[in-house]
Length: 335
Image (cartoon, rainbow, N blue to C red):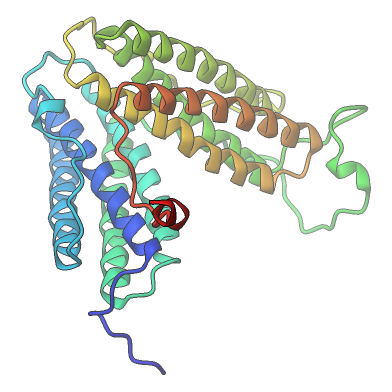
């Protein structure tokens, strides 16, 4: 087996991954510092503190990687993007829900990142990040269960048996009698409803405190779309009398004092909307009913458009940091 030399220059995939991690973890550090500052429940404070320590550790490790490669350290998000002592915008209940969904995002990101990394030290680091995020997910899920705020997926109470699909109408869904939704499709709908619900709550809170009218209007548009998607996903479960995840919009306080910069809030929402493309796509790929697949395809297109709108605002305002880019040899030759 070929010996891997950790002193080899990191490749473009690895560079892009750790660069993105720095941006995301500096944002997380800002958010978590604020959430921790006014958290009242001891168990909630414990999981937020653990998540904050992970973000801080990751930031330092990425700095080390980039410094060793003589690459610049991104700006990311700094103390200027957070007002730690701002009044409470979200209750402790929502903080737990938020942290669980962010842990799910982290697990997805690290698993995908590890699969494209070659250099041993980078791989080992990302595997460690995955392990740490699994621990975070386990801890926050335990807290959510203990407080009775976890939205558990539906349970199938009918008698199950081993069988094979025998008719093509299993995949139909637009006309005639539709078969009941299956467990795989339930899983996709329920997870996407949970993630959409978190976006709805953030969009509600952020629209209440942001300074820019343009950004506020964007949050309101995004929330309107997310509410519609939540309804569409809910219908998938409702048709079979299956329960939907709990909505936590009541966990937003009446504060109008911004705890974060408009830049951070807009980046957070735009990237969550972009991430939904992957989760919708995965759910679509596992759907075995055409009407459900069509719903996901349509929602994917809609979420892509509004995510792009958010990115455009970030660019217009000079808030979008450019990722590492390949050399433009054509323009260099002209110079």
